[in-house]
Image (tube, rainbow, N blue to C red; front, top):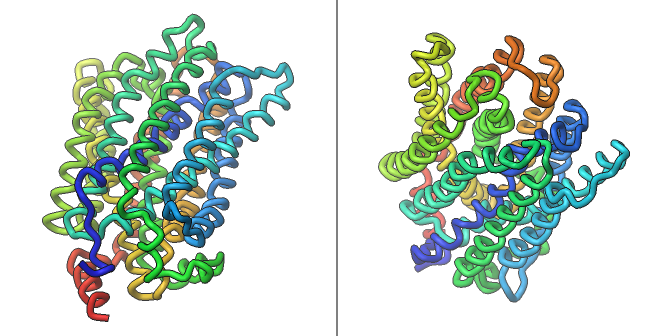
Length: 458
């Protein structure tokens, strides 16, 4: 087998794929409960909570290239990615425990804001270290035409499985404590569960990388000293597929994040039935996994570009159906909830391809521009992705302010339409932007196969 043709054992793919869930577990906790905890538990202002959420993601975005460059410059006797996965896990979990543990509660709002900001920064640094390795380590594990979409399906399916279970269990769990969302104990115990999931999956991911992530795996393709921040600027300037993917996947991620940050309030004030959230989450778990499998099949039979576009078109279609027919009456609740599950299915089809597409772009960069910098590729993608998705916190804060949100407020017409726009209208616009951007993405299945053949001949 040449150095350019890489294939791993299925068990190693399976173990490594848990690294995505290890980080998205904490991401789910933050996206579901960060603003809710700050407004209902810490009694801080909605605008302040939204600004912290968004500003921290902007800071996170600008740390990404620095961390990506560090990873691509580093080769240890334990490989490249395994040390950074462990460092990221410890840092991430320390931040999560400090934010959601409820061990410190200052009487001064300013000190409380400062505490949250500091530990949120710690959390996002750890998150970036660990998640960057998920994106970039794919290039060293496999570039096989079947294994890469298979790895993408594994990465996505475990994340959707955790997301579905989390969405079903977490909200009623936190609300079950006396005082509901204002009680810090619910957030504390939930954070301990998330930390435990992260630690177990991190260890398994490190084990899965032990065969391919070795010092000798990199010596033939990279002089680590050549990787600098200039590599990122060269990458953005010359790599057309990366630009298209950043816009397409970034707007898709924006749609996904803005939905998750509004989910509790959407079912409270728009659907006006918080129990329906559990129904949607339960069926969404099933159809999310089905969506991942559909994404795998389409990517294998055709290519990852077509699979991503299929999910994105469906992600645009189902919200349009809701907007047109407006199935809000009690007798049409089944149709409304069914369409919400269909949106989850569509999102799964599209998102199951994003991580493999990032690896494809990293291979393209090595093929066309002679730079093997998969971590820089992944974190450059994350930079713009996070800048775009950081708007979700600002928009949610603006909506909360517009409707005059207070903890436990009664449903109002403004709240109904405010959260309807957050979960249905704005994500639909995000999917439309993705479709337009992906017209400029050139890496098809045929192109990728030819790229590998050409590099083998070189």
